[in-house]
Structure formats: C-alpha cells, structure tokens
Image (spheres, rainbow, N blue to C red):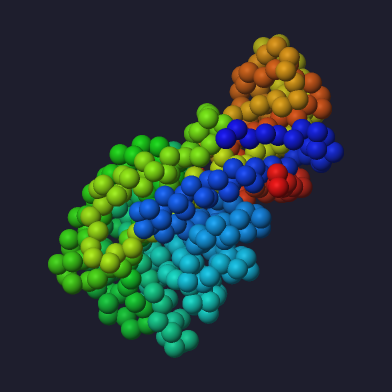
Length: 382
Ligand code: LLP
C-alpha cells in the first residue's frame, strides 16, 4: 500500500517533521496480529523503536504487549494503558529505581541479562515481599548477518547470559526465593533479512531446551526477541514485511514442549514503513564536481544514515522535472550529516519538500537537540 503524501497540507506545516501513515500502521498491526493468532504466538512491540504517544495508542488498541528497555519505557507503557501483565523488560544495565518501578507495577517478566542482575532483582523483590517472574536472556552466539552495531547475539556482544553460563544461571535462579524462572529470551540483532539466521536461532534453542528438560526445569515462555528486517529500497512495494515467512520459520524449526508459549518483540517491522521524515530544501549549492541539496532536517532528526551508514530512500515530492544527482545533506556542523550521496531526484529547488522514507523506526525516538536544534514535530494522516 503506497503512502500518499498530502502535499497541500504539508505546505502550511513547519518542517522538518515525521509523517505517519496511520492506515498503513493499522494494516501492519492487523496483519501481524492475525498471523500471530494463527500460530498462537504473542507479539510485544519494542517501544525503543518509536514511543510517539499516538503510535503507542495504536499498538495498544491492536492488543499487543510491549517490550521495554528502561524504567521510563515501562512508565510510558503504563501511562498509555498497557496491561502490566503484557510488559516485559530487558536491558543489561537496569538501575535499582527501574527494577523497583517494574516490581511495583507487577510486570509480566524481567528479561535478565546476568547473574549479578538476577541477585539484585531477587533482593529488591524480597524487600517488597514479592516474587518476580524472570526469563534468562541467553546470548546464543548466532550470527544475524546484519550491521555490526545492531548485532546482539554474538559472544563478543555485551548482551545476555553467555552459553557457558546458562546452567549456572538456571540453577542460581532456582535457588533464589524471590524470583521465579518462567522462560528463556533471545534477541540476535536487528534488520535481519536472512531467515537462515532465525533457523540457526531455532536450532540453538532446540539444543538448549534439551538441557532444561533433562534437568526438569519447566519453561513456559520462549521469547524470540525481534529483528525482522524491512525493505528500505522499496518502501511502497513491500510496505508490510513478510511476517508469515518469519513466523513459518519458527513454526517449522522450533521444537516446543507441552504448553510452551512463544513470544516476539518486534520493533522495526511494525513501524518503520509507516513513517517518513519530511523536510524542506533550503538551498541548492552547486560545487565543481557535485551539487548539494541542503535540507532543513539534520542528523539530529534522523541519525541512522550518519550512525550506521543506513540507506533511506529519498524522494522529492514537490517536483516532477527531469532528474539530476544531488548529495542530500543537513545543516548540522558535521560531515556525516548526510542523508544520501548521488541521489537521483527530479530537478530540485529551494522550498521543495523531500520525503526520507522508512523512518518510522529508530527515527523520531533517536532524535536529539545537537547544535541546539529543535526536536522534529510529528503528524499523522488520520
Ligand atoms: N528486543 C530487544 C531486546 C532489542 O534489543 C531490540 C532492539 C528489539 C527487541 C527490537 O528489534 P527490532 O524488531 O526493531 O529489530 N537503532 C538501531 C536498531 C537498534 C535495535 C536495538 N534492539 C537502528 O536504527 O537500526
């Protein structure tokens, strides 16, 4: 479903801003919930991808749970009416106040990333006279074949409990009286387009499950994290990711035990394609070898190209003249403040509107005020 930009109403708006196609968001959420239901899977939305209040409201209305990685994300989820029993909380560095907040709310599950963290949760839960449900976040040492900055499931990454320590962590969990081990959790990385990585994850989980079973440790939840990638090159042709192929991979390869529930924590695949960063051309500067389209959005508004060399499709939505090549750059005082080099655009002039596509995930939420610039605004189609 191609996103339609209401250029006429954009004219009156102050740029830059994020534009969200509400209908596409709803269709995506509807697709994922329908397919998850078919497989009896539960989907949590990874709030880190986008915590815009409207997005959270739409996600809640669609009936999903949430995956949080900070106390403030847990708080935001509660404020937006998510059922605490659908909130899971991961992160390698949970501070005491964050753990306390989640304990007070009686969240569904802590995804615990180390034995020392488990001990602290146990101690804080004990003080409150509570028993906290936890899952062990296991680092499965599976290569996600994605960008090194968004790979999380390799031994060299800081995330999760290493395979070598899983047995000790499981026995430790059983020995602590204020925590209750309910499951195991994984997240191998983000923007994964090779289903082979999820197959490898399934195989690793199957091996681990044998050990838990042999030791009579019952796991009721297998949480597979997120990571499903999207098509940044073709935001309109493939606006809804292939959730079916993704779920099928696990349905085929993951061996479940009686009564086990499968959870997912999807971020990017749910919200990336519905969002575009809309920016206006300030100047076209001609160099001897190239020309620059200088726009009013900068790396502070969308940091992915500068931080990960990420590709985002760039469109001039005001002009239909013959094409030329431009480096599309922002106003921030950094050479990395560049959204794309040698981008083919219709002839571009001052005042034209530019859409930087597939920016609904890790866009607005990663914005900063670097150079004391303002935060970008946001606008929904409905
Ligand atoms: N669960 C956990 C524990 C995670 O750490 C993440 C993402 C997710 C779920 C959601 O993953 P997704 O379905 O969105 O791939 N800023 C980077 C992405 C960082 C992802 C961090 N963790 C980017 O802009 O590409």
